[in-house]
Length: 436
Image (cartoon, rainbow, N blue to C red; front, side, top):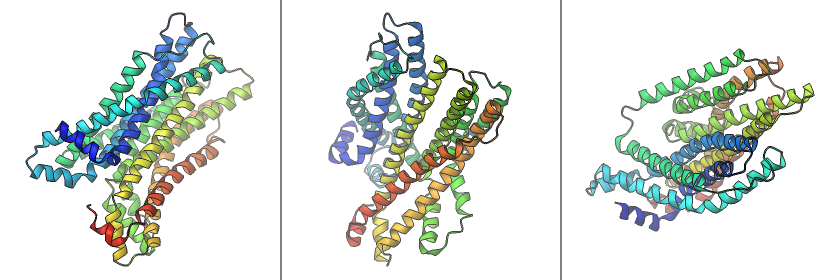
């Protein structure tokens, strides 16, 4: 089956391009930040510089690991789901479920290794640039030289390989076994994340305004709330669709399509919810903290500078990965609908009407993801603002929120409409004859 996996990659490399991109970016980010561990472990590095580098590598490396798994899992899930007919044909030809799993996992492992190997060069350059940024801000001594060693290399390869193989295994298992015995456990995890996130956000009121760890509780609360909403995304989308007042042919068809494909669209909602929640909450709280320090006339300490750098870096990493996840998922899902679009056109729909349906679907997904992401973000930002400044809603929230929503909407609608427009260039009769 491994030989079959290699032949599958060689014959249809375009199918694995999205997975390769996710693995490449994930490995590059993980190796870039984990090279700070190698740098901090060199002889002659002072304790302050070592602590700064170690904290950065630990925090961002942890976020990066989770994001790599989510990005690769989202891409592979779409890939495997679109190969359902192919996998069923293999089973009818005599392949066992275990053999199919080995084939799909083998494909993912090969792609992950190629992506990790390709990311070594960019990771070295990125590590040097990151160290230079710390040195320019005075957080790391100028005498410290960058080192790209075994910690960075092994962590990048291991995390990318394990994330890809694990995500592929879960995706093909989901296809071969269906939804049996999964709803209860997923619902339990979602409610546990929501309860823990709410408790974390409420625990903010137990801290004082000058506590150095004040931002940790609301930040993790917002993250866990977004995870809970993300796990419930199919049910949330169905609830929104039942209350939508959309009218007209495009609106009616968009609602029908979304209602039939809620499970397939869960990955897109996961990206939108987590991006809106984490980025909006983190940037808003950091802006509130910076303005509070500036108003007090104090000078930021090294720890405060480290925290600010970490917050902005984490948001940047999340933004990159969410964009990759959204683009990959939307591109694959829209391209896969070429046959559906062709059938609609043969039934009398114009290309403009098809694009109208796609646009309506994108708007519904964006509004749903942004709404629940905003709820999670406010659950973190409001308690922090109350404790830190005695205000309720931070003045910085609206500007940050508008920027994040604009980015999410641009990526979602731009990718959906751009891909649909390209797919519609294929004549309808030819699109219908393509293999589903």
